[in-house]
Structure formats: structure tokens, C-alpha cells
Image (tube, rainbow, N blue to C red):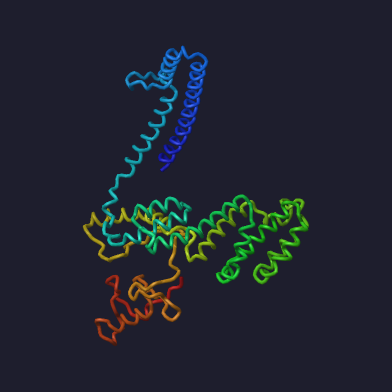
Amino acid sequence: MDDLIRHSRAIEKSQKKLEDELSSSLDDLSVLLEQTKNEITQDPTRLQSSLAHLQETTTKQFEKLPDEKVCKDHDKPFFRVQREYNSAVNKLKSDIEKRFKQDLSVISNPEAFSGKSHLLHRAMALHFIREGQFELCDTFMKESGIDDEDELYVKTELLKGEFRKMYSIMQELEERDLANAITWARENHEALRKMGSSLEFNIHRLRYIQLLAEQKPMEALMYGRELFAPFADKHLTEIKRLMTSMIYYRDIAESPYADMYSPTLWADIRIEFQRDFCALLNMSADSPLYASVLVGTTALPVIMKLYKIMSAKKTEWSQQDELPVEIPLSEDLRFHSVFACPVSKEQATEDNPPMMMPCGHVICRESLTRLSRSSRYGRNAMRFKCPYCPSESAADQAIQVYF
């Protein structure tokens, strides 16, 4: 991968040189055209000679010679830089083709999305909206034949307004303007409180810090007195530190409270705002389409290796919708804190929790009980077969799983 990164950086460098050379060449051409225009305006009788001179000059500067006639020492700057760029791109292409020879079609399932085009349309449309690509979403909906009476169209129109508001506030936060973020947090106070969010307090906290940084201690004091009280039951210790830090407002960076004024606070509040804004819309902070693609690409090396092993042993994995190996994922890609039983398709509850059998497969307790009662060994038998593998076990061998 180091070679690929090195080639990518070489392309970036060559592209910058190409852009600079192109801009310079266009500037020279603009000057030349302006000079020719002025000559013709001042003396119309020189029209033919001026145009001939323009053609001769542009030919010398911009005409591309055949490759066999190009001399490295006399090649024109623009085309020399262009060749360097093309060379860098070709090196990267060759390296990619050399390193990635696998045919990914052997591990794909062409029928996976058969009859599910509406799900793909939904995933892509919502992804564009979440990314703030509203015009791209409109184009996609139009080209996909989704009209204004479709349920997806109505949903995306509603979400556009919400996400426009979100991105507008996030842009203001990037510019260190908290006014609309504070207003939004106040309007959604109750909903944020119910989901256990600290966003509203953190926004007020940041405004308090901002006032101190602007050398406005009295305004900060009045702001804290007015707005911190409702959050005292959860953030009392931090409120005490904030109010005490006012003593050092002239040089907070060198005070015992310097940790409360981290330069990452503004980036943190933008991430927290986006997360909680999406949560109030019953949506995750990250696009599901992005997460799916990321997980899929992460799993590719493991699945490809598994395919090679099984091909060599001439065996097949017959279990539907389940992989025979675990895919290592980072914590931020581990979802499904709410478990749905793969047998009954019902969501787990406190009375019907997920249970893991000795073989490692997990089903809900009610499904476990039904399986043990319908065992091939008889109603009173203790053992039964796992619905997803050949293993046999008893109901009392299963252990409860906590997500």
C-alpha cells in the first residue's frame, strides 16, 4: 500500500503543476489576444499581419508536436507537465492492476438485490440528502423515475428542509456563531432531555467560554446564572468549574482550568450537534449506505481468502445469509444493540431475551423453548438441533446475551 500512496501523492503533485501551467498558458494567451485586438483597433490596415502574427505565436507556444519529434530539452512547458501527469496516472494504474488481480465477481451474489430496487433507491436518495447533496438527490430521483406521488419523494422533500437547517447551523458553528444552535437546542429541549443528551448544556457551556475568551466576564457571569441552573442536577461539578474559571479569564490558557478551553471544542460540538440532530429524526449520524460500503470493503479480504480455501478443498458454505467466519470490525461499525431473533423475526425484550447456544448461534428464549419442545427426540427430550448448524444442545446450556 505504501507504493500506492506514493503514486497517489505523485499524481497530486503533477496535477498541481499541470493546473498552474494551464493557468499560466491561458493568461499568456489572453494577453496575446488583447494585444492583437488593440493593434487591429489602432490600425485596421494591419488586420492580416496581426492575425498572421497571432497564429504564428500561438503555434509556437501551443502546437503539440508528434511524440517522435519531441525532444526533452525543447518540449513545450505545458505538454511536458502534461506528460508528467499522464505518466504518474499510468504508474498508479499499473500498480493497482498488478496488486489487485482478484475477480470479485466470484464472491458476489447477483441475485442479492433482485426485486429490491426500491430499497436501493431509498438508500441512495437518503444518502445524498444526509450528505447535503440536494440537487444530486433531485437528479437521481428524476432519472430513477420516482414521481412526486411516490412515498420516497414525499419523505425526501420533508428531510431536505431538516437537513438544510442542520447544515446551515453546522456552517455557523464552523464560523463560531452559536445563535441559531442555541435557539434550536432550546426549541428541542424536552426531546434532547428524554434521550439523555448533553448537547444543550454543551452549547451553553461553549457560549460561556466564548464570552470569557472575548474578555467579557460580567456577560459570561450573567449568562451562566441565567442558563446553567436547569442542568445542575447532571453537570453541577462542571458548572462549578466553569464559574470558578472566571477568576483567570485574562489568561485562562495558563490557569488550572486550561483543559476546559481545548481548541477542539468547536469541532466536538459540530459532531455532537449532527449526531443528536439526526437522532431526533430517528436516523443514525452516519449514512447507512456509507456504513454498508465500508463494512463490505473491510470484509472483502477475509471473504476472498475464505473463497480460495473453500475452492481448494472443494467445499461450499450452505447456510443462507450467514458467513462462516467473523469479520473484524471497529467499534463504531458494531450495530444492532436491539436484537431481532432470526427464527421468529421478533425483537428481543426483557421477558424474551437473546440466548446464545454452545455452538455460538443466538436466538430468543421463546424460540429456544419452542425448538426444545419440538425436538426430534420427543417432547420430553432435553436436546435439540440448532436451526443454523448441525450442533445439538440442551435449552439449559444456552446463556443470555447482553448487548
